Length: 141
Image (cartoon, rainbow, N blue to C red):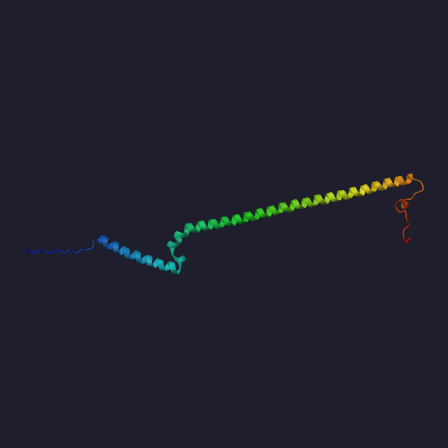
C-alpha cells in the first residue's frame, strides 16, 4: 500500500477576520455595559436619550396640545356661562319692567275709576262717597 499522506490544514485567521472578532467582542462588551446602565440609570445613557428624543418631542407636543385644548374648553364654558347669565339678567329686567308697567297701568286704572266715581258722585246730589261704599254702619263706630 502506498503511503497516504494526510494533510492537515491549519487555519490561521486572516487579519481582517481577527479584527472582526475583536470588534465583535468589543461590541458585545459595549452592549452589555449599555444594558447594565439601562437597568440601573437609563437617563445617563446617551444612546437611549437620543433614541427617545423624537418620542419625547411628540409627547411634549401632545401634552402642550392637551393643555391648549383644556384652556380653550374652559374659555368656551366661561363664555357660555357669561352669555347665559346676561340672557337671564335681560329676561329678569324685562319681567321686572313688565310687572312695573302692569302695576302702573293698574294704578292709572284705579285713578281713572276714582276720578269717574268722583265725577259721578258730584252728579248725584246728596250722596257721599262713604255711603256709596258702606250701606251699613261700622260695628265699632
